[in-house]
Length: 172
Image 1: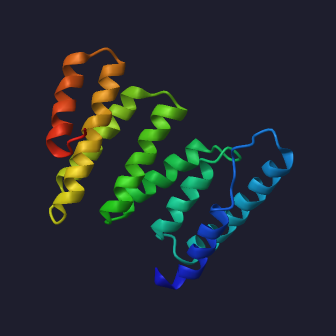
Image 2 (image 1 turned 90 degrees about the vertical axis):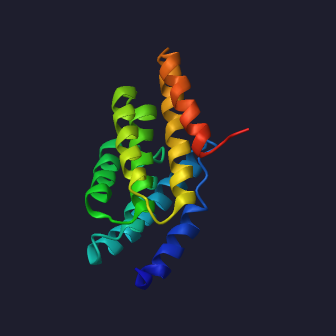
């Protein structure tokens, strides 16, 4: 993956120029769309040479989530590809987070988000060599479950998950 470091640095530079704060400015919108298309072209070049380049896939997910593309099905496909093919826990956790975001924020499917959070918990339980990452991931995932159950009005489940969250990653 080091052979694509120049391309990844170029993606980062381009990404840092994006500005979605002024939605009414047509010139900014055109610049953002062109920049996003340039990033996707670089990503596609990387993926054409190395289809399992998970950093490139994660960049494609970010761009497909931008206001110019907003391509939830492509994001889901990339996330599922990462989950089915990557052994790197960091990539897998990011893919779960993107799926959860899509289910909650874009598709309003809280029940599927809860299922995905439970799948993520199973994944987190398998982390053996990094206790800090495991505790943080457990804490964050339990906290998100608690918030979802609280939103649904199930206070007892919410409290249960808030307690589990606090056990792993105490928040003040």
